[in-house]
Image (spheres, rainbow, N blue to C red):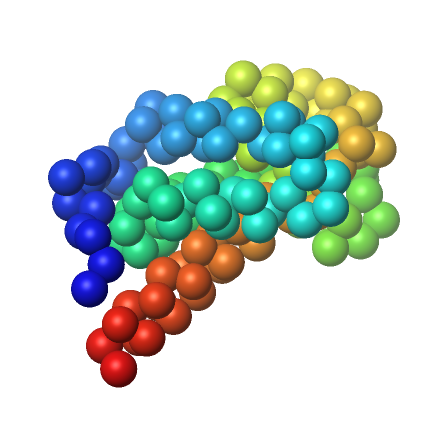
Length: 143
């Protein structure tokens, strides 16, 4: 049976914005994309599964997706991207860069246009990887 993460349990509530932003910034997306240009989201998944429970990851993902969608809605007004997929990648990338960059882009949409050429696909895949791996581990340990 895997060691419980309860001793490291950190309550992640979708309404606890400061804590969620702190975790996103601890992941350090900008450093991951520099160090692991191919599939940096796999490193996001590894970090999450090593440090958080499935429920914590799911709650963090809900927070992240809500923020990403808020940013998407703001960026849609500016016609910054040509496709929905590009908009999703851009807004996810910006949100992954942390609260300060996110807030700047919410206030000054033209900054997103500058960041657009540096967008790396897609931070959110890390949530999927972490949850899948943790569920698969639980399943294999039950068998």
